[in-house]
Image (cartoon, rainbow, N blue to C red):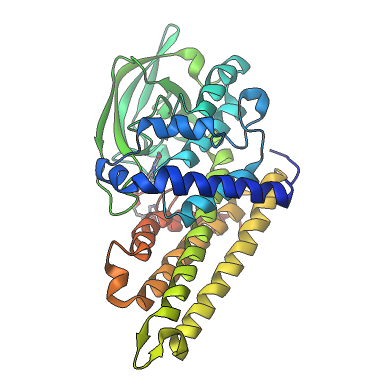
Length: 379
Ligand SMILES: Cc1cc2nc3c(=O)[nH]c(=O)nc-3n(C[C@H](O)[C@H](O)[C@H](O)COP(=O)(O)OP(=O)(O)OC[C@H]3O[C@@H](n4cnc5c(N)ncnc54)[C@H](O)[C@@H]3O)c2cc1C
């Protein structure tokens, strides 16, 4: 990726569109989505019709023709709305793999449909026995003529319930570690041997669909191997992970900014001992510190985004942004929640949802510990 900056006026106008989408289309239905564990399928089509999917995919391939800056705006607005229901981030991540490694014919077939929300994308790396240690995956793809037969189990897969296109991380050579890993696209419609498991019941991010997937000799065309050569999967994952990590970092900044906003408003209203909470020095200092952390996080993340835009974001720097902002997110939200007293623990107060949405940010996309391992290796 190597793109020019968008104008601030254009990004502001786009931000207004996204905010309206969340306020009018997502938030009014959020409780229902949370109860069922996934959004309605039509929300994907609606987002597609509004041009909110595949923001940084060229118009030539059916995308919105923007840049990763547009995606960052969307991520921040979703965080601000305290919502993770629509899994557009993973959908975008999948599109980046397709842009980088699919054939031209495949791009023309999949990307425009993904942009319209007709195809929902997912990426299936994690298995019950292997998450951080991806070399240890057991899912296998065995070549048989013009097809691969995929067998294995995946878990914690975002968009798993709705996914029409799943990038499956599989071993094409089980005797090898990283060198035996390949990425193969499974189109789930009428795919014999493919089955979705339960939608997992999570602590937070209740409206986002996260599911198990099962493959039992699922027959996928050999042409769906990304990159055209077996054994390239691990390198492909490593190349694309900085993009995913920046999405997590942007979500962290958006969420903690919202927490400070909510806590500041509450502290001005709530009274105790004859004063507003904002008049207590402890509250003032807590909020001043949290606001500073948001500003510092934002500055670092936007510097990283500039690098991503210029095609120069290296893996350790993306890991720094991911672990640091997600850890800050949890701390800042926890401190802001404290200002709400008992109300902070009540689900009807948005700060409670900010709290439960935050925890997973330190886990998915690579845990904080793995981020530090990657950074340490570069030192
Ligand atoms: C809501 C949600 C959505 C997700 N979405 C997806 C998705 O769409 N696709 C997908 O493939 N996966 C997805 N995941 C999976 C996620 O990426 C993994 O949970 C994560 O990578 C950690 O793997 P694990 O759960 O197996 O933990 P483990 O790898 O078992 O780690 C357990 C603990 O050990 C630590 N640890 C492991 N190795 C080391 C080490 N070398 N040094 C120090 N500490 C270590 C970890 O940091 C962690 O604290 C999702 C997870 C969640 C919860």
